Amino acid sequence: MSFPVPIRPTARAAWAVLQSVLADVEWRVPCSADPCQWDTDGASEEQREVAASKCWPCPAITQCGAFAGANREVHGIWAGHDRSKLQGRKAAKTKRTEETK
Image 1 (cartoon, rainbow, N blue to C red):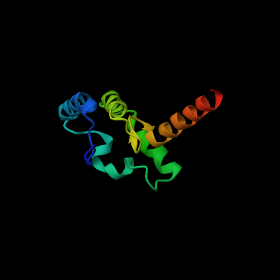
Image 2: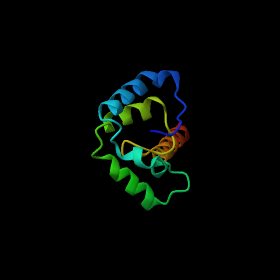
Image 3: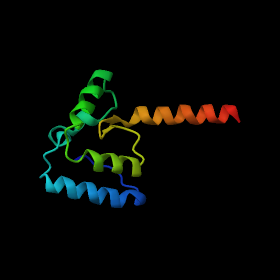
Image 4: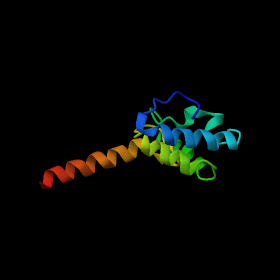
C-alpha cells in the first residue's frame, strides 16, 4: 500500500498493525513493486484476477484484509479480493433486503 489511502479514524489501529507487518518483511510484498496493479479503476477482469492471485502468498494478507475491512475500502484489490465487487454484492444484498420489507 504505497499509494495514498485516506484512513478512517476507526481503522487507525488496523493500519498500524499492517504497517508493522510490512516493516517486518521489509516491504517485500507483491503490491509494493507496482501498486497501480491493485487499482481496479479501468482494469479488466483478467487484470483484477491476476493482481488478486498475487496476494495469496503475501505475509501481510491477513492484516491487509483487516485494514481494508476496517477502513471500508470499496476500490482496489486488498488481501486477494476485489473490494469493488464486494461493495457491489453488499449493495445488491441491501436492495434485496429492502425489497422484502
